[in-house]
Image (cartoon, rainbow, N blue to C red; front, side, top):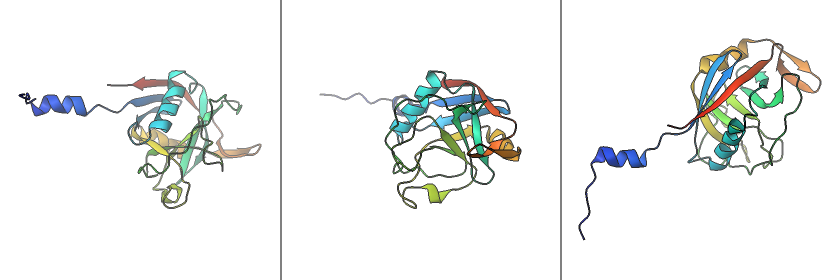
Length: 182
């Protein structure tokens, strides 16, 4: 039996698929997140599901702490909690770290409670990694465009609203969410 040798460029096109990206238009500008389906398949699929069903549109970044993180996706402009799918199992031990510009699933004290909320790290938050503070927080993506927009969020004044702290005084709304697979 004789095997055909494929040119390396052709072979590379079969093995190096581009990672999906999510383009968020916000009231401050565009943020593009590259989603890591390989190392975080459960979290990536969950995040993409909310993008595809359109339910991130109209949600806000409701918790912004300069030097730490910006959290969003779970509340509308009036701070009403948005509906969720069932929580997903935690996959924080996937080798991805909570570094500046990475995106991770928010959760409660229950490790398997992540639904639709996510956060973007403003700093290397190693203390959120599974190997530093078990059970950790699952990183599933990174900002590849628009980190300047994320940084603008940290410059906006915040307040306490009910039991919530660090809520931007002027809501930062996701106005459009698009999945791009190239």
